[in-house]
Length: 116
Length: 112
Image 1 (tube, each protein chain N blue to C red):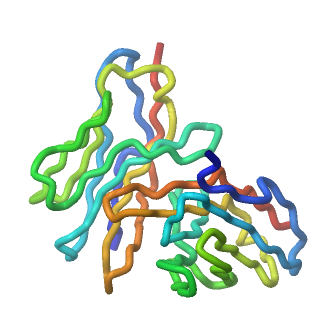
Image 2: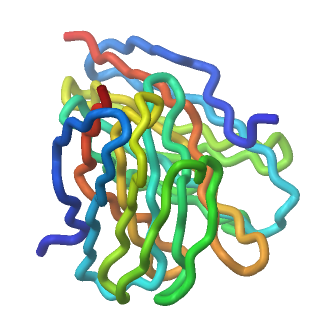
């Protein structure tokens, strides 16, 4: 079974508008972390935002926010005021801690295209 | 401020050849990781090393070996390359528990 699911292979958004990229996860570990990364066409992986499973508030980093709904096991990324430079692949990832070591699982990604 | 450095950036191999991908980090991180990225499949963990002297298998370890040479360096070896190992390989390192992984720029490997 997929542990990280990104159901939107591709998304379009108009410049300056907000967009939500979906991510659902599955884990029985009470302590876990959720991450979003951006991969532009140049290929590097850029960290955007982190949410810990015990964090009470949704994480925010500039124009990025994470809509964390623990009971629904979802961790959607919200990008406000989209810019042309936001066009990229976006990956959701979960870190579990089985046996005290960290393991990461990545989703298959969402390709976002920002339209002028 | 190098972060995570991977070499080489590109490589073409013939089936059956061997090769070692190098990775070094200068952030004094304990944990290091090797991933492969294939179209439509995101990143899949090959091997990881929680600390110097330890390595563990990830999701797709078959056909690969790793060495954690010291705290800085974590290499990935393909003993007998196969076309199915054509992929982009990323090395990453991680420090504190609530910090993200830092990725290298990737190695694009083609096996003919």
